[in-house]
Length: 98
Image 1 (tube, helix red, strand yellow):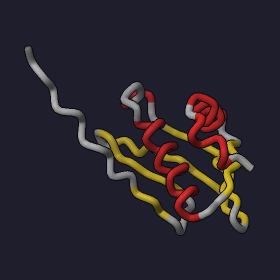
Image 2 (spheres, helix red, strand yellow; image 1 turned 90 degrees about the vertical axis):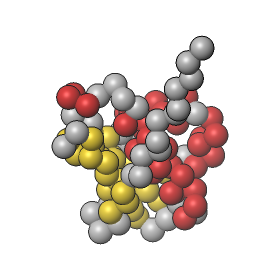
Image 3 (spheres, helix red, strand yellow; image 1 turned 30 degrees about the vertical axis):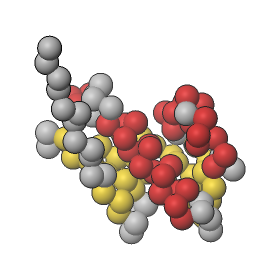
Image 4 (cartoon, helix red, strand yellow; image 1 turned 120 degrees about the vertical axis):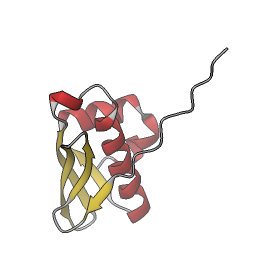
């Protein structure tokens, strides 16, 4: 019986100056962009290049963005279709939706 160690958590970078969460995978920049208006974060775009797709990167970006919103007391507008679908699949984040 073999047991695999879980993959290490990604240390997603939050670039507050550009309103972006970032992760670089195999040289490919993956992003979650948002616009902050007061205490409302509108998540506008999730981008993961096809070359590194299917690895759970978009989910990790969105989870980090939503966890950051919760910690900072932000409401969330999921304008990006991926973020909206993620929130629907994860009811623990639905209370953040503005």
